[in-house]
Image (cartoon, rainbow, N blue to C red; front, side):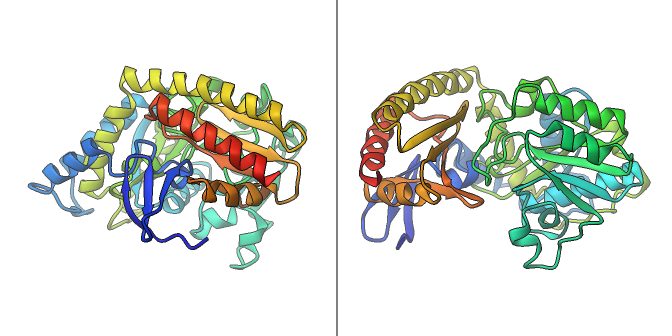
Amino acid sequence: MPLVIDRREGYFLHDLDGGRLIDVHLNGGTYNLGHRNPEVVAAVRDGLDHFDIGNHHFPSIARTALAEALVASAPPGIGKVVYGSGGGEAVDIALKTARHATGRRRIVSVVKAYHGHTGLAVAAGDDRFTRMFLADRLDEFTQVPFNDLDAMAKVLRDGDVAAVIMETIPATYGFPLPAPGYLEGVKELCERHGTLYIADEVQTGLMRTGELWGITKHGIAPDLLVTGKGLSGGIYPITAVLVAEHAAGWLREDGFGHISSFGGAELGCIAALKTLEITLRPSTRERVAALTERFAHGLAEIRERYPDWLVGIRQNGLVIGLEFDHPEGAKLVMRQLYEHGIWAIFSTLDPRVLQFKPGILLSDELADEILQRTATAIGKSR
């Protein structure tokens, strides 16, 4: 697709030829609050009067303020925050933390997982990428099918697994929803075998499911939680690993065990603090609830019109996957959406499924326009 992005504002992208697209990809949730959200932009502009990236060797008011806000918003037991600049780095931090805390090396993830492209993160992901970079270490990184609790029980029973890392809803796999009781069962198995549970909330966090962290909808308090993308407000890169006190021993042993010059950059902390503030407003939660219902109703109507083509709707809040009756159906729909002014992408590891992620501050009018254009595009792709 010959898309070179020029101007961007709210949930709109404008290309160099003057075309306009409504963004329902959002770079995996980076732009939950829209492109160049005015409040986040203003906070960072004001921050430039005092802050820059900062120096990772020293304490920081901005990093401390964000850490306190993240801990206050986190599931029970979280007491520490470690910063990164990208999602893969944050996953690396989480996996290293789990290995240190347990004294074990083995990591378990799910088939078709995606946790980033850095060293340990890529090894925990799909073999499409592990083989390419010679990171397919089966002795240290094991994968089991998603929603298969028996397979998870089998791989954990020897008591040699440091951590299970799971996206609450696997994004690059096309947002398959966890079966009732599955995530809860995985957490119980982890506790039974001394394995830490890492919740990858890079795409499902920050109110996309209607809760700040998707994992809390399952009543689970993870040992570690990874957040990124939307934490930046779409303005300044920042990621974080939220760590339970019992897993945070390396921070007391050697706080420079992980070093990141740009991790927790102070301007990024300013952007993230404003992002958290906006996201936690009651009005934002109400908006997500209303949009969830609006899209559920609208997409169900589209499916009724094309039941042999749109064969599945996977939805939890505003995390949505649209499943089509063709091995690469989402690519065909993506093309038609592009022609009709909507930007969305197919799921890399299951191109039957379109990733459909509306912004959490959309107006009703724009939501209806998205649904109308989507209906037309799906009909033409069929």
